[in-house]
Length: 234
Image (cartoon, rainbow, N blue to C red; front, side):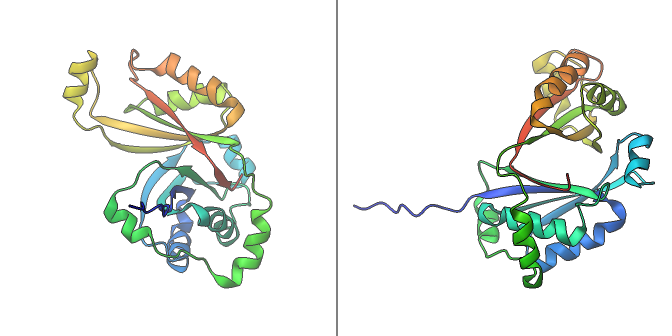
């Protein structure tokens, strides 16, 4: 019996962090690119005032958008996004793609449709693709920390070479079970810090955060690193 060897398409998670005042432009881009599902949330930028002034930014409120696109479309989507949202301008924002290893069946069916951008922008986009790195040059650090410690995390990260990050606030599920298992007290209210760093600085920054703000400290920080295989805005 011959087995079906048709390879299912793979997907990337694309994370876009931009100033809150261009959220509508992001939504318009998603609609024009026919991306069926995306999530938007609020965050607070952590860049220092000197860095904000250098970038021409007066507001640290951020909009974080998360969507999923087919791997083969990722570079084109990032290039078109870079063009449409002017991410190449300093301080506007950043978009990254992250490999994902699994996806629910219902979501797969929704996403397994052609995703394309604005045809009129394709010439510029294809030109921009050539300027993007095809190797993993950056990493996304995702740090969960007890409420009130995010600025401490950023101070440590900056001292180790980071330039800035974005803070999101949320809740940790089942804190009692986690506390019982690991023998530590964990607040239910959590802050999530997202930092995009150059690959060569990843280990140093991650180590500094874990050492100074890890599970055994009052911050109870947990930090992980995710590979970034596509980037726009840096």
